[in-house]
Image (cartoon, rainbow, N blue to C red; front, side, top):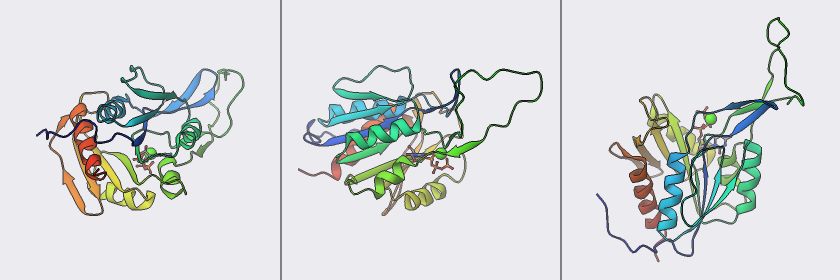
Length: 221
Ligand code: CTP
Ligand code: CA
């Protein structure tokens, strides 16, 4: 249930959030992307701003309005997102909600690639930088680094492994085995060094409010 807290508990804190997918160009008309509406990240940005934080929202291509009081930086690719995150530092809290494309085309064509009647040419890929892991290891590391992990199976074990591998403090493990993508509801487990908190299924805006409450606990005035 909702706990009554002063609305300004994150005042003076800078919260940096990534949200949405990234688009990795193949040619001027084609790209590689993940499925992500951006709704969860935008809801967290809104909740953090309502809690009094200064919020920087680095957003991939999404069709969503900017929440009130949030500074939004629009980006396309993972490498753009990585640069925008670095430029927004320092921050007290980083919440990496973006569904970053793991790979991009190794070679981007200057002109639209045409069908030539035969089989398509192979599309060599290369790996994108891991923005969360890079931030967690940087000398400007925010005090609290939070990742999201969308999983379809073995949700908590995968999230625990990800937390350690990436050096995040918390992983919000997101059960996407159902109909979450683009919808309003989410089932999450908060994974940290102290264990696992299983949250009941709830609206994305309630996940956002609850997460911001948990963040406030880490920043007592
Ligand atoms: N992430 C990131 N940069 C990347 C990939 C992921 O910052 N290049 C962040 C996401 O924003 C998220 C967390 O890392 O907070 C976990 O993303 P996820 O895709 O679940 O992790 P991966 O390590 O890419 O593992 P998987 O093979 O399951 O995709
Ligand atoms: Ca990934």
